[in-house]
Structure formats: C-alpha cells, structure tokens
Length: 371
Ligand SMILES: Cc1ncc(COP(=O)(O)O)c(C=O)c1O
Image 1: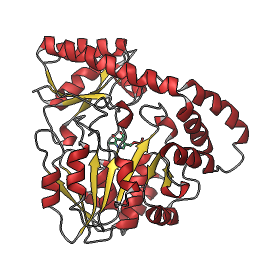
Image 2: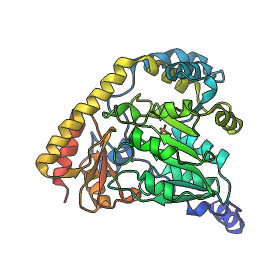
Image 3: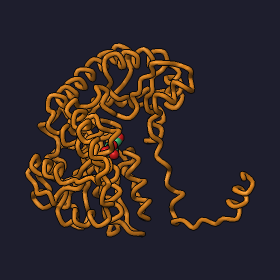
Image 4: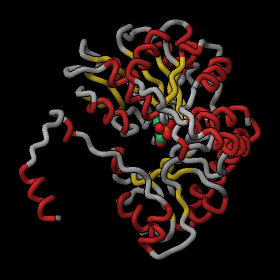
C-alpha cells in the first residue's frame, strides 16, 4: 500500500499558485502536552501565544453549557453582531465576525488584493499578514521599525500605485508599543482613499496608555477607509473557540460577506463571546492581573539587568542578547514555553506572555538559568 502511495505521488503533478512556496508556514506556540511528552517533565507553563492565563470568563462557560443543547442547528450570528454594534455605536452592517481575527485579515486580502498589488507592513510584525497577502497572490512590502516602533513616515514613503492595504498593529506584537492618535491623525490624512488601513487591535484591552492610543473607531465613523480587527482570544480568554470581529465601512463589509463562508463562526464561539462581552468583572480581573504582573516581572528583570521594552500588551519583549532559538530550547527543558523572536527578525530576543504569579516565577527562575 505504501509503495503504491509513493508511486502515485511520484507521478502526480500538483499545479498550485505561483508564489505559494514563498509563504513560510505559521509556526504556532508549542502546546504544553507536547513539551511534557518530549522532555518527560510535568507542570510545564505556556507563555508563548499571548493567551489569557487567568482562564475563561465564568459567564462564557455558563453560556456554553446552555448552547450544547443546540449543536444540531447551524449557528446564527446576529445576536453577537447586534451586541457589538451597540457597544461601538455603529450599525450591524459595519461588523464582520471571523473564525478568529486571523480569518478576517485573510478576507481583507482576498477581497482587495490581486496579483501585482502590494500590502505594506512592518519588518517585525505578526506573521499572518504576509501569509494572507501572499495567499491572495500579491506581495508584501516590509518597512523597518524606528526604535522598536512602527514607523508611519517610512510606511508613507513606501506607498505606490500598487499599494492596496497597510497593516498596522496597535499595540504592536511583538514589542508592545502603541501608535498614538496624533501620529495616526497626521498619517491618515495623506493616505490615498483607495488604500485600506487595517488597525489590528488584538491586544487593545490591555493598553495602559489609553489617553494617547488611536481612537480607531472615530476614523471609521469619519469615513476614512480604515478597518479595526479585534479578538476574543486574548483578554476574553476564548482563544480555543476561534472568534474575532472587525468594524469597517459597511460597503467593505458587504464585500467581505460575499466571500465569507456562511457559518464561519460556530455557535459555541458565538454564545461564549456574547456572554464574555457582558462579563466586565472577568475582563477587569484579567487586565488588572496582567498590569500587576508586568510590574512584578519588570522589577525582577531590572534586578537581573535583563533588557526589555515597556509594554501596552499582555507580553514582554526581552532583549536577551543570546541566541534566542537556543534560549527557547533551554527554557523548554526547564518547563517554560516562550517564543523565540527569530521569526520576527530578532534572533537575540524572546517574547514572553504575562502569566499568573506562579507561572511568572517559573519563567524568572528559568531565564536566570539559561546560558
Ligand atoms: C497581532 C495579532 N493579531 C491577530 C492575532 C490573531 O488572533 P485570533 O486568535 O483572533 O485569530 C494575534 C494572535 O496572536 C496577534 O498577535
């Protein structure tokens, strides 16, 4: 049987999109069970994917119990869309839900990009942007950072007639820096109206510098070609259910809805997200815990004289000044999963998600030990 399979493959010619092999597959953070099995250790902590270490909203868990009785039915999305529309004072027609905000990013690329088109993003940014651009057959233009921050002036200088999308991340992954509203106001007024500016706000709930962050919805309401993506995967603790959303001009939403698969968000995700939106206690507890733990870890890193960047998200970018892939592996053996920043273009930095106190202590112990 195996030989037949091999023969079959040998004679098979798959015809695929021209630039597909230029896409580097996304490598997710290593799962806890896998590390425990590989290294024969227990109590591994995962601080690699910026998930919510506190868990999931109790209200969301309760809603899940109720919705398991209706799994024989296709999902409906209107209740969550209505709720989000009310929260942000927009129309339901301005909102698109996704199987994670990842999926919405892919829909933007599919709707707006053709071959020869270009999307601009920062040199050190969330890897999915490049994947969705290339899978639409278009090309990515990477713009360097300025002092670990997204450089809006440099982005502006890279715009050509082929540019169709600009990706911004606010707060930024992996550095945790924010783009300020006054910077953005200056930037957006010079951007041609045919270019969609996507502001990926996956970590928006954790922002400490609320006073200065872009008031993104304001720009959509003013009619700019701006879209904001947000997620239930981080502060709301629902990464496993895959649910995100985007607010955008309704004309753009109607285009996305033409290619969106009808039941892209499942009924469990919808019910849990809807309940989580109402659970302000859990959200506040999650955010407060992250802020307290950032202060705790920062103070310890200062004592150890380890460099890190100030953050407005639920992770810290640590300039370890050692081979990051090696540090990542050594920390795995010590039962701590972090993220090497090599794939983000920083071979001597790691990113660590802010966990609960015990997890953070284990991380601090491990970082002190690595060579
Ligand atoms: C910047 C950024 N955007 C989007 C996402 C994707 O989130 P989701 O789980 O909603 O697909 C992540 C996840 O890590 C992220 O870091």
